[in-house]
Length: 206
Image (cartoon, rainbow, N blue to C red; front, side):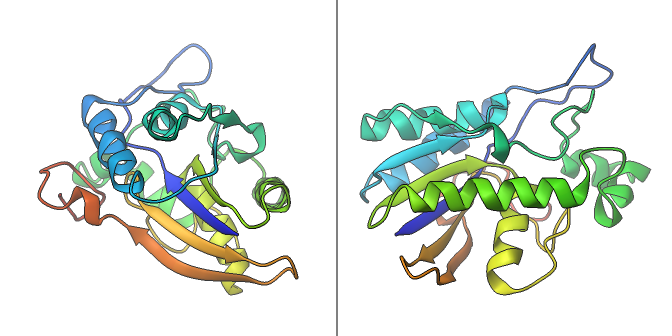
């Protein structure tokens, strides 16, 4: 089967909320999600899964519409910051030289336990794979989730925040065999954002 790991689109900034921030997509994030769905509409997708967090669920919505599928929510592919009371896009932290940017590059901070996070992510994605032999399945989730699983596939230490920066609505593909073999096919596909003028990540624009 082919697993498509898709990062959510650009979220709104939220700080000091009463309870988890759980931001919705910014207007640019909705546009990114539409471009991603249009791009994948040329392929066959048999199932769509999403994290319960709003930014992922809203990114999955146009993909579900494109294939007439209702995205299935999987709690265990939520990000390691799911309970944080603030969410500031990392690009804004970097531009402002905010100390929180440097913290993100070195530690997960006072968030989910890293080992527990990695274990639940890998187990959840493996359950999805096991349920879809021979299918192509899209999983809309988060940068830390994508890093954890791909690091596991290629033999790196799967520790948050991870070893690379997944761009907004980027697609990373993993081939998974019935025999248990996992191989990375593509990493961070974003060709569908080229020429759109939309933000892609830390250093790139569409």
